[in-house]
Amino acid sequence: MKLKSPIVGSSIRLRSMTTTDLPLKVAWYNDPEIRRMLIVNEIFELGKTIEWFEAIKDSQSRLDLMIESDSSRPIGQISLVNIDHQHKTAEIILVIGDKDYWGKGVMFEAESLLIQWAFEKRGIEKVWAQTRSENVASLITMKKLGFKIQGSLGKEKILAGQRFDIIHLDLLPQDFKPANCTKCP
Image (cartoon, rainbow, N blue to C red; front, side, top):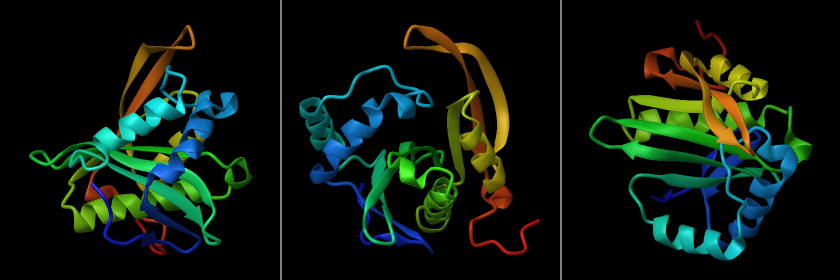
């Protein structure tokens, strides 16, 4: 799935991912500091990533976007995956690859923009996510957006040879607290 036009926020914009973005995706996903918080095992290779992208780029079950700064600099990637049109659900995933933008609210704004778009423009009625239990920044951001923890799966995934707990969260439209909310409950 692709966007017809970018989703624009106050300091970032979300646009459809293209083949030219894939070297950044590979670099970000292979960065050891970034990988510490991801739920992935594979080492990314550009050739395989290009093949993957060609196979999924027109899929109706996912939307892969780049996060750009206000100066059009790519700083991360955000996606809706496992989009279930029958049950109106989707999983959100995000990587802030440019470390200059860590701790600056990009994760919050990007997730807020995409979730608001999904609820208002695509008829999604539930967004869910999963994260490592030690990914405090992700947990804080999701709770700030209104996500609720639905459970913790102890030692659920083996990543880099170690077992990790995985937290499952979900968000319904009535619980959503978007970035532009000035008087949220």
